[in-house]
Image (cartoon, rainbow, N blue to C red; front, side, top):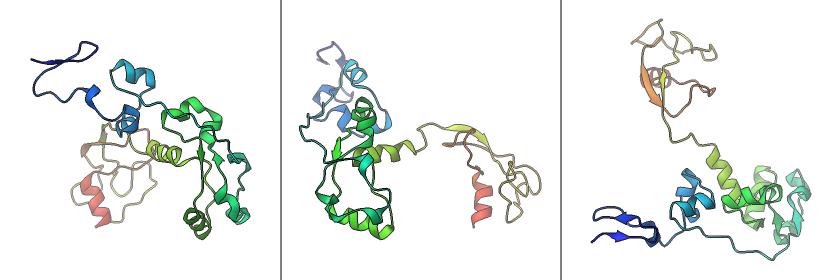
Length: 199
């Protein structure tokens, strides 16, 4: 007898477990990083969503009040709750990636920023993590041609260091799938041309 959930969806033997049996909410999993959905979309699909707990704490300092240079930062910053820039600018959007609203700088972190001469972050750790995720290539492949045009790249930005034996001075005929879109600025060579240049 198949399992039927609250919305009438039928799960037959051999299919993956129903989402309502998951101990985690959608926005608590890595799925939210790769396939971000709003709370409404999540609930329409039958997944659960964990709302953030209301914080009654007030910030000691706003991100706007942080010094621009690490040499101007005092040691007492580690005792202060800092308001996240993302939350301050758009709390609804920030809550979609679990913004903590307030964050603190720990002593080891402050020591690291001073050692590396880095400014204090304006975003909470969760927002910083989502900024890094946005820099990833999307989960999509584009059909591309090799950009090796003989002794240089198509856009003439890169000069080859060696003649490539499989196409000599001609344009490389190889085509392939890559995670770099054609409108991106990166120069994309096929594996043969790439290895000829780096090995």
